Image (cartoon, rainbow, N blue to C red; front, top):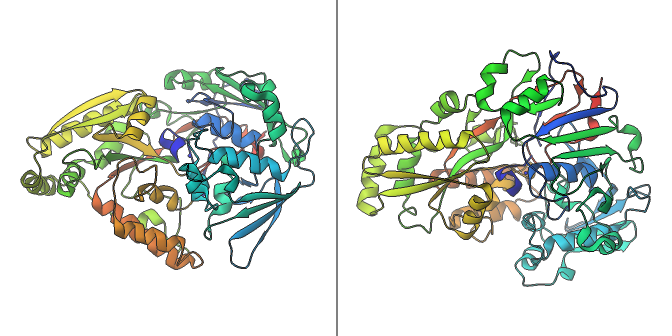
Length: 541
């Protein structure tokens, strides 16, 4: 999930990986008819839809605060709290009807104003939501200007025509709007309740009401157990099959696996170091996850704006060796920033990642040639690679890259610097870095979920890379070809190739997603974009 998928989120469908495992060897502690426990690695930073950032937070918000759209297990967006939408002839006005039976968990009606209030908060630069850029990504009128502090939140292109009619004004046609609006940051917030709770809002389960299939129970900020119980006032409660979903924060991969084996949890991801140990277990399942790991070069750091230097570094790294010998978790080599299985060609059905240019593969000879050119163009002879401690694999990957670059680029010194995740993101935001080993997961299933970050004026373009050709192609996709899926796709593919050929952000690998899952759990699907899991479709048999 976008920025949250730096972690995470994460992330987002949208192609998906259906995680249905065979018979497990351990006894489940869950009531098989009504509950499931999932181990998660990230804590809850906030359950305020506007402020929720971490993967677990976005998952909870997505399942307790349904928006206009939700996502089915097949990855397709479907109406959530909206029952229908009418589009104007020019495609720039969307009129949504809120379901008559859409209620909050306290029994009050969900109204159009709940969306207006929530989205205005999302746009408010004083609130400083990490996902405020998504309003602009959704094409909502005046969103970018409001986020930049140039217009008031009242000018945002959203209005409540009446209690159950929401009108959204767009600045451009949006091909992927339903997928984007299903993300957790677009959830409604009841203005009356928010004002009533004031600073206590979302601090505990007693200071929350829910519009989705679940509501939070017996929780306060800082707890490592988050319990979701069925919301009987949800408009589609009859189709919610599992009464209780428990998320248990376990950051140690070994402890998480042990919790699965002793029956404490019914689902857990596995680190690469544990795959060999559990790969023959009947509960083991593997697939591709929702993050692409890559190197981010700071174009404002002297010498790193040199294309030959970046190309030399990219050509020095044996990505196949990283996934096979370092990670060992099912991760696959990535040659595109657009992950495999996320987007397909509307004309041919081919995967976007497979049609991408391959960029710079491992070649000591080419690395040496690029390096020889770079040495004549820049005096840069050392780089510092920044990475965080949120994944135990990062240190090993960074050390491998260090050895590869120093081996294939004689005279180049690579310094490694590990820090906390927050420090890493703060340094990226302030531009205080040389190179960052980082990752990104898309918030919605479209190439622009990744490519838009590299537009010259995008606030998420932390590395300050700029290309007029790239900007032009993205602009064409958003305007000239907005109503022509085939030409739009081709323009985005060309933009992707410009980015990859620049070596501004060499992709390394798409993370694997090895898991252990109880055989009694059905309908649990991990999405490559947006909210990672929608528990509405889970059943325990």
